[in-house]
Amino acid sequence: MNFFGFGQTAELDIVLNDAETRKKAEHSSEDGRKDKYFLFYDGETVSGKVNVTLKYPGKRLEHNGIKVEFVGQIELYYDRGNHHEFVSLVKDLARPGELTQSQTFDFEFTHVEKPYESYTGQNVKLRYFLKVTISRRLSDITKELDIVVHTLSTYPDLNSSIKMEVGIEDCLHIEFEYNKSKYHLK
Image (cartoon, rainbow, N blue to C red):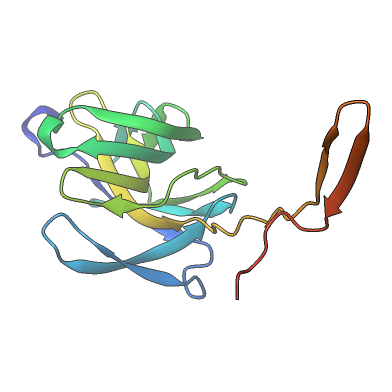
């Protein structure tokens, strides 16, 4: 019976731990629409819960494992089928078995390195997302949650001193030192 699509299925929901207090940022989608997504910075922990709600309580749902992934990928619009993943972290939430009731699983990706900012352009899209997958024999059940990443690009100003030496060989040597390597012309 499961073969014809009449069997058990489930709804997936991803809830971040700090969803009520976390900032949201506007980010444009491929069609130019601006949507709000949860905002993260490089090195921040991404954690939350995955709610698996069975459509028919009491009936069992056989699965080959449940996993959550944190993915950072680059999509080229002219090459839709080919994605370059530069971040891919996976946590197994459940081993292969069966579910007979709705269940909640916790996950945490600590201090995740997010090297690039989220970006949607004319030819390329750089995105980060969480993806939950219930692996099954015929068709997997998946759910994705996009997030936006901003990087803080304040680099410390290196303003070290400069030492110079000028002179005539074996006759005169003058050594001077500028206390800064940059000066403002007024």
